Length: 390
Ligand SMILES: Cc1ncc(COP(=O)(O)O)c(C=O)c1O
Image (cartoon, rainbow, N blue to C red; front, side, top):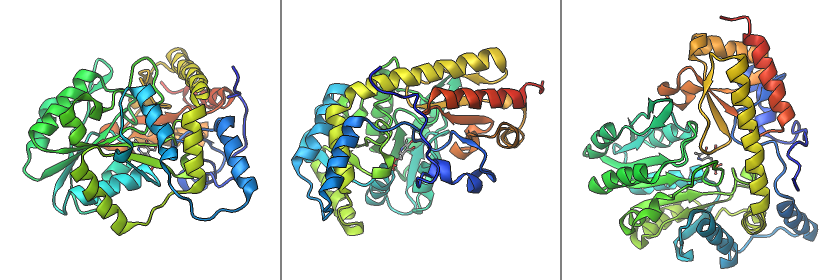
């Protein structure tokens, strides 16, 4: 390995939400944090070098967004996901959640309905309800241990008169599904049939294990014209704090509407370091990412084997993408009972499934984006806290 993912980096006192907000979240500081979705690894050295050079320059005035900063992203998406994007379709913005919010405000009105597929990334709920839109859930269903879309229920929700948008998580956080082509086509067909716009959050699309990620917009001209796709280098290269993301809107009418609302609610919010980091990561970060994915696979295998042998009452299905594991603790009792043991006996900070919707009740999400030593310690702590419970 050319890159060292075993290095333990002290992130306390570094403005890290994951490491500095423990007292607030868990009521104590002696917690191994495995919650919010950033990783405990340094970003690629190729990115750090570019940032260091820029810092040394010492002048940090307003940045100017040139096409040359968008090109690397476009090339990356073509190489990784075989989708040819035109540079005119791309809008840069600070972060995916804000871009999703702009889309919600642009393409729905208060009282309109928006469909989400829980258990799902928590801010999806808030994006709908805090803007006065009606939440319609299309819960995922578990078949033979694998999460699937319930298409009958989806059709019901999409066909409701005031449904305007589907907030789609692809790949899916927290259940780790990488949607297959037939699933994407079925979902796309239904959205086209009922004239529902797709907001496809593809922030996790680069960390994929055995499958291939397919951007839903790449599947047909019709889907391209009725989808907004959201990307960022933040999960892939651990750059979330630099707040840089990309929205791809091929349809000109939709893009113009989006841009009109965007410019009415914010000025161009690009950070000079985010701009440079994203550009460098997409140009020079591929080898680092390949090694990261191998390392994460090793972490996933470790946790799955560990629980299989030591605490078999907890079941985990291997994720197809993301650095998030979805642990089924339901056989140990209620979520609050398990949570209390995890925090106060194991001293491990996972996220309880119910925050991803009631369908996640009893599951816990574990972020395995950390050096193996930290992971081993967390697993040992969990084992010691649960081993005497039958
Ligand atoms: C599905 C999904 N979308 C968006 C985000 C956040 O993206 P951003 O920080 O760019 O708003 C996350 C972070 O965990 C995520 O999992």
